[in-house]
Length: 128
Image 1: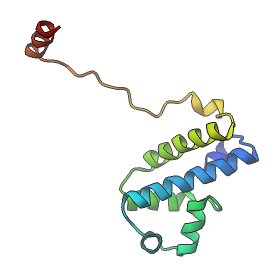
Image 2 (image 1 turned 90 degrees about the horizontal axis):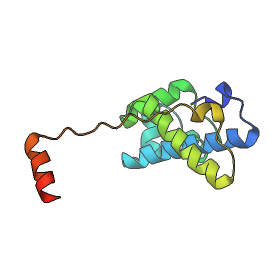
Image 3 (image 1 turned 30 degrees about the vertical axis):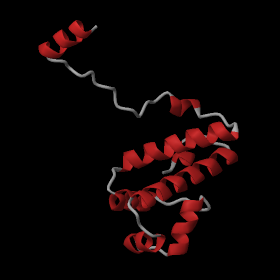
């Protein structure tokens, strides 16, 4: 999750990005009902190192991010989107701006409209 190196973020924004990445890892670990020691063992790192990632003290490298996503059963882009959403919420609370170059891109899939059958349309017309 190398957003801070691809975009020009100031020190406060980089710190916030590291904390958001840590929260994303923490969220995924808790969702899988895993202890820090279990996840650290699966990733081949020390438990103290994983704790530093979760607290936002250190930033995991790209290879470790891929491993975390694989162990937690999600795709790496999904992990990035989760981190980005957490970052936006945390930036809003901290009174920081969201980088304009990133907010242009939407990571959400377009919503599909449900196609109704003829019977459902007639029921809706009759009820309304």
